[in-house]
Length: 273
Image (cartoon, rainbow, N blue to C red; front, side, top):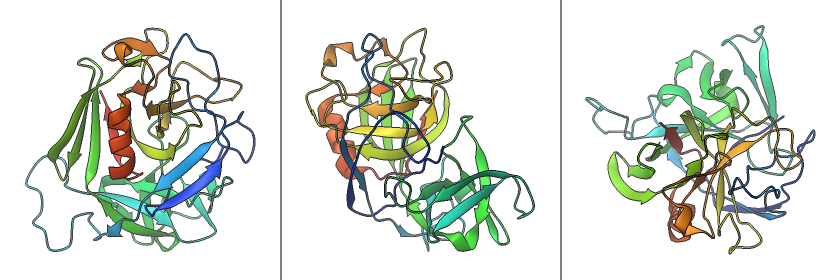
């Protein structure tokens, strides 16, 4: 199943989230573990324009980071009609997946680069929005353009907290709800893959829902789809925050998801611990 992030540019695309089939996007896991309805039937996808990236992922002219996370991560935006991800930086190596640009729903194709744009000559290593979680691959450097992203997100399941950093400065902190004991929120390094505007902003997803690059590790399907994508979204039940209640999605207040939707770009790293 081809799935990819959005380009960092202001673009709204009408789309339908339906059952997963060849050439369509899988269904996002629903917010409430007691609600077995599918994801929103329609919405809009939002992306934003990035800035030119230096080869090592640092802002041009800025000093190197002495310690801790880098101030910027790197997004790799496709510039060719399709991008093939290989297991090794070699055309003859096994293919992980071939991604169309734009994707089947009309979205520009974007990956998050590994380690600020780890390269091997004509190749660059990227995180891939495929199963299993944490998958990476190598794509041709000529097939992508690099841009810097100053944001990163950390989710701590033990403290039910989400923190957003902008160039390593704390930008926002909020309470979350996470997956329950049977359908836990997976641990790992992901990124914001897509932004959807559900048709009912007062519904279980709130006004916006980010789809992450990760999948549930216990659900093979959801709502008629043959995959179960982890999401970060608003909620119509703020009393559930600080609890284990979802199928694996991360739930936050509607006012907070609205702020993230207009400020934090797709491709932003999301570390869940």
